[in-house]
Image (cartoon, rainbow, N blue to C red):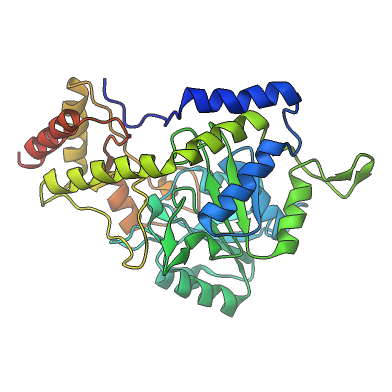
Length: 365
């Protein structure tokens, strides 16, 4: 069986050493030493400041909305956020959980990211934020989005779940926006089993969020306001430190696999047009086929060979119970024809060759 992905598992010996320390200290959560060590190392590796570790990527988005004043605590002001329909469901559902209405704007047909030229028409007096997604680690047009946000005095929160380690013009892509969020789910390039992070532009927003993730507590007997429990624990941090120790080898292996895919896939296969000024983290292997019928045929042929692929992202979220039913023709088109092929570090040359052979046979039918 060839799955669409496998979680990266680092050296057991290295992980055991971290866990031995946890057992000795009996400090399992609440700003433990491994969590603090991982925070520092991630800030250094990613080239960012004001990084806040949290328990998962969805809460990272929700905490960012709260800390930046995008959420509506009273649920009566009907705040809105302009976002993309071509993303994982958490981007939109996290907004709704925080009382913010997701308003969709269509994507660019080449980058698959939120198209700046479609954003401004959706802005109303209720708009509080723009929530773009760096789809599959590809950079949005951050300069154009920044100009729109400044013009209309709204916040920008980037869902950067796929953009771990991606640089833009020589600096971390995560520096753009009022905040950028990461997911450290087990299937991600870098993971802590479950987990996430928020990178804030401003220190005061970081400090506000730091209180929010720990019940609003600022001391043993001092509550600064309503909060939630979104802290990362020491076992999650231990896994993250181990994965980070081996990130270079992980990236090298994934790069080799992606390059093999690109050299072997038929030229008729549409691939994502990457921004010319970014580095690539080789997190996913998405392809767009000629039709939805072809996608279904390919999934069937792959399954017969014990190979899993995923229609990621499908459906377009405007067709999934979010928004007001507005058509998003580009997102809907890409969502109907996209497929993510298997990608993980120990995918063999023979297995990859079999996958591309089946793809070639289906697309030439």
